[in-house]
Image (cartoon, rainbow, N blue to C red):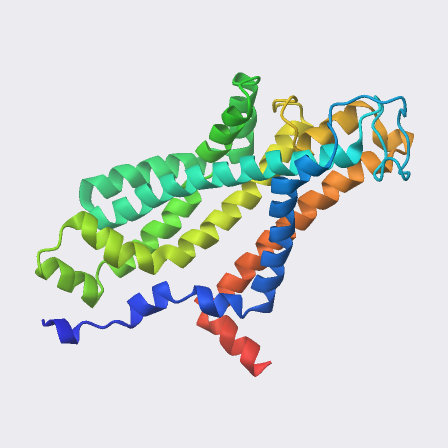
Length: 295
């Protein structure tokens, strides 16, 4: 086997997914909507007032002074909504990043090494897949309650990496028998270099897709934990806003401006991330592109 005979198509495909994705209307729409939330989280807290400041306007509907009304204790809902965007995105991104790193190490590492290492890592992944995710999150969160935002991040990351690891392992098992990987082994390349140069770039789009789903899972899980009172209430997120609205019986009292905005933001952010993921699927799956052209 010589260098000119090594097929380069898979490697080019793995690294050239971003430009076609940007031409996808779904991807572009999702990216634009996500950019709005990111800018709001980054710049918004500097533009709104203190979300914890109390006023004499208790439980007031939206007015010119308070665009989204106030809470039962007179706090501005808009200020809370904007500041909560930063906390929500932080927990979602950090949890997804940790979970993705673990899934890459376990999935790609086990799939490439094979043998006893693969069996051991697969066993660990299967254990986390068998355990019901939501009860595990609730139990662990109740045990570490009060540990701050990072305890929530670690709990969510701990329970969300296994499925991605299985996907990456399956892809790695397919890639490690490709000609260009075999050629690298014949040339005496080190294992870590083969993984970083030959395997990882060809799985980058899948890793990004798995990261996006991990962010969605983390945001929804955090909102659920906060709504149940299992998250740190001092760390403002859209979930904690729903928690405080529930405790104040905002739904029964008709204070729709308190619980509808955070719920809509969670739905809109999930939609943006889903559109980005769908756009990536159109690039990665040739069957979707064929259907789109034939339609």
